[in-house]
Length: 262
Length: 262
Image (cartoon, rainbow over the protein chains, first blue to last red):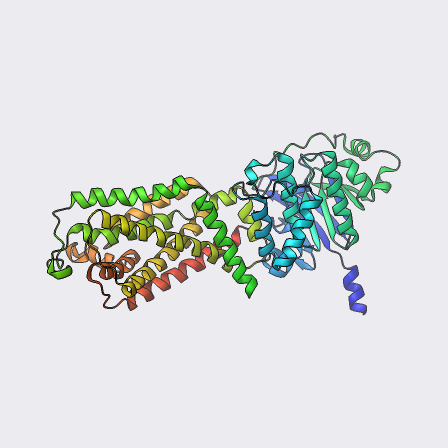
């Protein structure tokens, strides 16, 4: 019983002195240290190029820290090599990872199979997600015919088709209208209450202010402040807090940052 | 166990669907062998292959076109297999392949699905090339069992070469590099094999290379089956091709693991 309890309290994520360099020149993260307890929505906020996507890259195993230690779901280093670890983590990166020559239905089915979901469960999950995200009618069509918002929804749905312990989302609301954003945030909130730990990099401040449990403010590869939205805001808006701290605009834009690329 | 098989199937189906959604590429792949048979067939019409005099059905002399048909058949497989990695370069660029490989599924069934799809497609193409050859006047024998052995040899060659192509695609991640590979590797393999000219009529040094060229090992059993209606001993060839296929499959698996990292 004791060990169970300890396990429950163990951090889902802990970064200790993590730095990351793209190539040998561009330093994207500098001495990043934080940890996240299970459950809840953690929002990464920051201006373009502040290091949000790099953190998600490291948490997903796509990037290896140049310095420091990253522990995710109890494993450190090369966790991406462990299939059991992979079955507990879902990642929807910022760039759409979809094959335009496949249909949405094929995409979800394929990833469902790769995630080891049995057929019946797959079908139920797929229908449920499609209904929630209002894409039922387009799923039989080729993805290249979808609108930007439809592609974004499908891209995020693929990450949701399994039931991960840790969900990593990079700008999941880009290109979505208010209704679709609302649906996505509701889904995230529901999953977090059910025990899923969610880390989301976003510029969607209204969603964060209303629903995030924890916020990390980032600038130039460092975490400059963290806490619950209420603690950080202290009666102001997150964007004015960020401007006071950094002189930068949080909602500035959703352009791709020039600093990162594979 | 059944979910592993399901992964093989679903990846295989995806590969086929994508092939059939590009009918132009598929139909072009028949144009090339047709041209080779026409040009080579007529160019070397008077080229006398030893051991073929009077060895045909009812003691008829076999012509160079008869000798060439199985060679072009194997050539079609060589060219087709060497290009099978190109699809994966596109899949890396869309981000979809990295996403597939970051799923909890093991890599082996994913690669196996891709290879099975390619091998079956190439075998069908090879079969169609034989039918074209018959229409061009090649006198071939169709004895089911021997033909099956010939196609097993061809399939093993296709599997190995598909894997090599995929490995190179995943290492270089560039279409241009694949074009170089296709030209730099295919021509030497073709011209140092017994696909177009028998070993006995080559310079000795070339003949000794040709003997251990995997393409020769694949084409010789098929040719025996098609010209003489019998295969004396294909055991060594099949064993050799199997070892080559397994080695190249393993190399491809190793490169796939690297795709998980950006």
